[in-house]
Length: 176
Image (cartoon, rainbow, N blue to C red; front, top):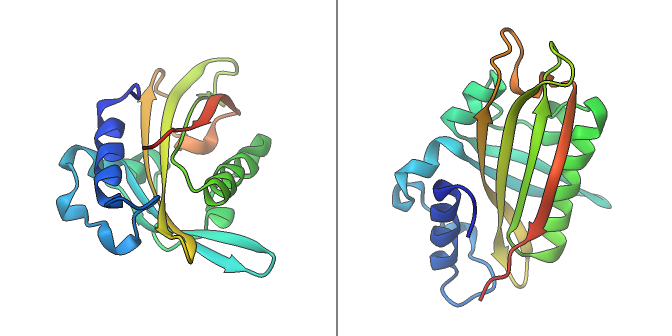
């Protein structure tokens, strides 16, 4: 279904945890039960009501994500650690908002263009975002996997130093 087998495995795990509900509760998710190949690429994000809007905080930030971001974002808010550059932060927050409103899995793809070599494709990304919560409370957490494929090694630049992020597509996944 998805272009990456690890994201397919994560989607299957999430679907199994639903147990007939539209979305699984956070309590149904246990990293020890997950396919081990997804753990390094995993993020668990708290959805925190903050007045008229929401804030999103990384509760878990997988080891491959730490390497790619050149730092552990665990316990940090997305709006404080995702770069604003070229609207990237707004794009990521809009994906989270859409997921919370729709309460359905969201898959997106895109490219980071290299800052050090303008116009050069630095890396591609595939992102799967899965809602966790209850029908009464709505989405309380987001379980996400992100696969980054390097195309050009740009020394000294963290993942989000790219001059431009270019989205290819995002779509909600149909679930049974």
